[in-house]
Amino acid sequence: MSDHPIIACQDLSFAYQDGPMLFQSVDVEFPANSMSVVQGASGAGKSTFLRLLNRLETPTSGNILFDGRPLIEYDPPILRRSVSYIHQTPTLIDGTIRRNLTLPFTFHTNQSRSAPDDSRIRRGLEEFMMDRLSLEDNALSLSGGEKQRLCLLRSMLLSPQVMLLDEPLSALDSNSRDAVVTAMEKVNLDHGITMIIVSHIEFEPRRAGPRTFRLEKGEMVRLS
Ligand code: ADP
Image (cartoon, rainbow, N blue to C red; front, side, top):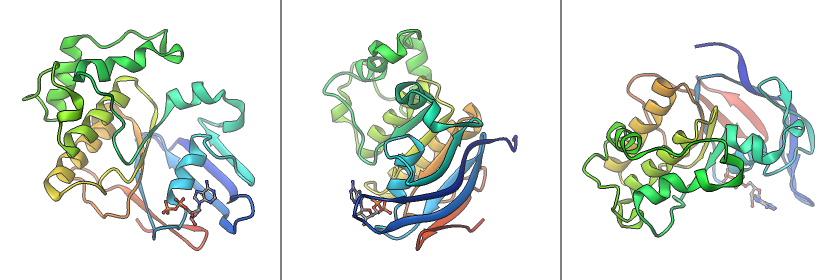
């Protein structure tokens, strides 16, 4: 693993308009290919932190660098191709698995990329332990854990450098959680994608311990 920080926050402070300071002078680095988990009480600002990393919010002061360059220098659509944000609740359309996985390739920002073919999709489903499914199955008929893994696969097929995951486990039962944790770990270790995961639920990946942080009273404290 390289120590090159793919994302670095420097003296980062943030408050919503007319709101209290959520972060005060946060300095934190996320090395390329690492997996980090940010914990913290509800309302501590975890989702806001992720949204800042994707330019969905703008810092009140301080800097965020992606790959050594200030975030502000990137066009948001280009940035979001490299730094992908995955919502807490899977956002899938009423259509087949194939349609859900190929749809992003019809978007303007991805027009230079070729959509995965059926054999690539089948390999992806196998990798994420969903090989019992057919490409023709409706994505909305899947279980919660399968939907979350499909969202992970959809994002992975677009080859981002970083994935930001907002509470990916919170809506799942414990069996589904294990499968999603395994899938997240594969994305990180087998595909080298940096993962920054906000989760109030503690979890133990099998192959590697993630770096853990706690966001508390405006500070980002490194726990491990
Ligand atoms: P967490 O993810 O840790 O639960 P959030 O980042 O969602 O915390 O929210 C942190 C605080 O910011 C909360 O007090 C929340 O009410 C407030 N907040 C979140 N989004 C907005 C917004 N768009 N405008 C104003 N306040 C917000």
